[in-house]
Length: 302
Image 1 (cartoon, rainbow, N blue to C red):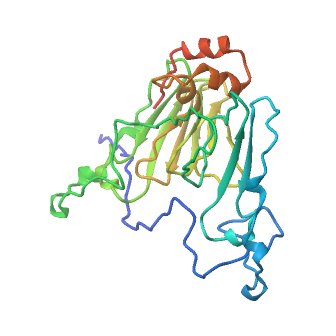
Image 2 (image 1 turned 180 degrees about the horizontal axis):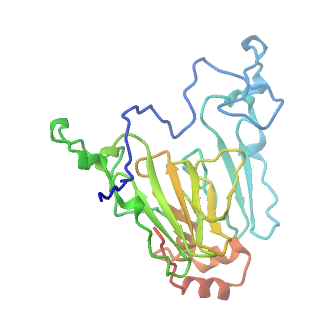
């Protein structure tokens, strides 16, 4: 009697499209927004150019100091498409941040932008937390000669193997990206398997370069994400197995090397540590609470 086995494989179709990690380039000189809604996809609808006025390209609010009498001691004045309609489609914005003494602009992320800051007054302690500094390449790894490619460059069998979830958070991520499948290089896609123990958690995290879609294969997951407005790339999200049985899920990601920033690990387990003054003010807790959290081992499940 013959035994038939099924191998789970990943078929990679080389139908790569250009993916932009910023706002799209404009196709006209300017596109003054029609200010009838705060929700838009790649830009608000354009007003007729002949109806544009100087007010569509002007904002005087940067000159005005803001009130910083609040628990964190800072106030952000944004200057984006909602303040200057003429910024529509131009892919740029600005902000003024006022700080009280020992004021803080809490740890944050911009899902659709990179930031550069200029200190006009005072002295600021500034930092950021990286996703992974051991895996560095710019837009992709160097390409091997096509004639040297083999089937192994496009194959990974690890998805069929359940992983050990005996750890403090009760989950284990098996990534399938350019490090596991070399043929993914430049194709802008990856995958992951997540195994969950009963009540296991894939902690709140973000992927700096990717949007994620998940498929639950076993169990029941409680899933959520925290919005900045209405976009889904780089947003903090999590999966929690709220059932009494094991769970398994697949997550597809729109990047060959999406990386993962697990919020708690990044904030409380960074090396060197973020100042407890910063975190106490950001989370509005006593510094003893922060010191306790920073002293813990923050388990990486991926």
